[in-house]
Amino acid sequence: MKKAPTLANIALSHFEIYVNNLSLMQDFFTQCLGLVVTDKGEGQDGMVFLSNSPQEHHQLVLNPRKSQSQINSPMDHIAFRVASMTHLRLFHEVLKDYSARFQTVSHGTTWSIYFQDPENNRFELFTDTPWHVNQPCRFDVDFALSDEELFLYTKKKIERLPGFTEASSWKALHSKHLSK
Figure 1 (cartoon, one colour):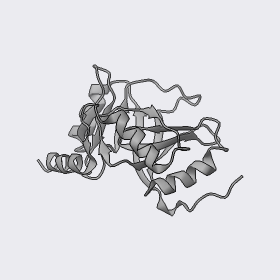
Figure 2: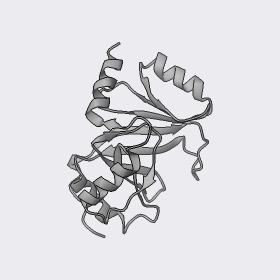
Figure 3: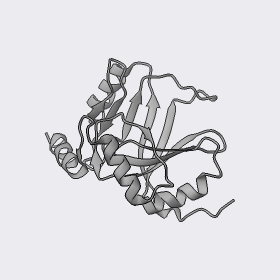
C-alpha cells in the first residue's frame, strides 16, 4: 500500500443523512438550529441543502431516501475539504488502488473523490471549483486530465446550468441571506 499524504490539510465539511420525513426534518434544522436552506432538489422529495456558515454552501444534506447500507446506517457520507487540486490528486493516487468503490466526480462547485473504508462507510474528499451552480449536480470527471483540461471540461458542463456564477458572488449573497 502506498504511503498516505499528510492528512493535516483536510477539514470536516458536511454530512448527508437519510430522512423519513423531509419536511419535518427541514423544519427541525431550520427552526431549532438556525440552518437556512441553500438549495433544494426538484420535486417534493428533492434533497435539501442547509448551512449557517457564510463559507459553506451546505453543512448538512437531508436525503429523503432510505439507506441502502448493509448496516442500515442513517448516514450517506461524511465529507472532508482539502486545500487544492494538488492535495486532492495526492489522495487520488493513494485511494484509487485501495477502494473498489471509488469514483471521481464534480458537483460543479467541487471536484470530489467518493470512496468507502474497509467497513463500507462512505466518504468524500473534495476541493472547491471557482464556481457555484444549483445543487444537486453531479457528473463523472477524469483525474487523468491536466488541471487546465479538468477546469475547462467542468466549466463547459455547468456554465448553462441554473445558478451558475462565480463562487465568490454566491458566497456574498449567501452571507447576506444569513445575516437577515
